Length: 359
Image (cartoon, rainbow, N blue to C red; front, top):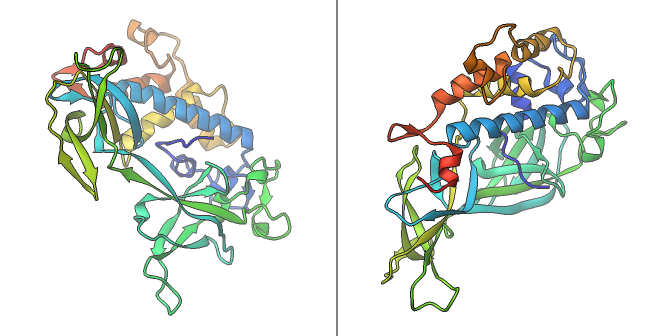
C-alpha cells in the first residue's frame, strides 16, 4: 500500500455529518447521543473513502493547490525566473522523510481513549503518524501530550491518545452487521489492535531541486546535473527560484555554474494544512454526488445524500456542461471550486496549459 493524504479524515467526516463515530467504524457502542448510529460495513466505508478521494482529486485539478498538504517530486519545468510550480500553496522545498519511531508499540486500553506511550526523540509532535502495524493504514490521532515527568520518563516521552473505535485491528476491519461489541476491545471478541507503528513523517530539506544543463561539452545524449535549493517568491501562487548549491549540516552553499540551465526538477511540500468550512462542505457535497446510493439508513444523512444527488428537471447550458456532473452537489462544488481557484496574472490556469509547459 501507499500513503494517502485525505483532506477530510473519515472520523472528521462522521463528525461533520453528525454521525456516531463508533458506528461509523463498525463498533456497537449503543451511543444514544446520536440519531445516526446504524452500523456501517467495511464496504460502505471503502465506497465513501473512494468517493471522497476522487472528489478531492477533481477539486484540486480546478483550484491548483492540494487540499491536503503532501510532497511532489521530480516535477520538470523549463528553466526560468521565476519558475511556476504546478501546485500553489507551497510550504517548503524538500522531499518526504518517513522514519519509524517505534514499530509494534503497545496499545493500552485501560481507559478510552487508549494510550500509546513513545519516545519521539527529535520528531516534532505535529509530524507524528500512527498506523496499523506493518501497514500504511493510518489511524487518526486524538491528541499527543507530554508524559507526566517521573524518574523513569524521558524529556521526549509522549502519550498518544486515540479513541478505541478508531483502533480496529486489520483482521477485524470487515465488521459484522451488528458491529463489534464496544466493551470487548481487548477481551472477548478482542477487535482492537494490540500494537501500532508510530512514524515521523516530515520534510527533508536536503533534496529540493535538480538543475539540468545541456551543453556542447557534455557527452553525446548526456546532460550535466547539479543539486539546488528552492526560494519561494510567492507561496500561494507557487512562484519559486532555484539556485544551484550543496547542502551540508542544515545549510545550503551557493554553487557557481558557468552554463545556463535548460530544465529543473522540483521537489516540494505544498497544500492546505487546514480546510475552511466552505472547502470541507464543497468536498463532501461532490463526494456524495458520486455515490450511487447512501451507505446507511439514517434519516439525517439520507437527507444530505438526497440533496447532493438531486438533478433538477430543467437544466441550463452551464449546468449541462458542468465538468463535475449535473447533480446539485456537483454543481455547487463546481461553483465554489472555481471561486477557490488560484489565478496567476488574472488567468485561471488549466491542467492542460500547465502540462503543455505554457506556464
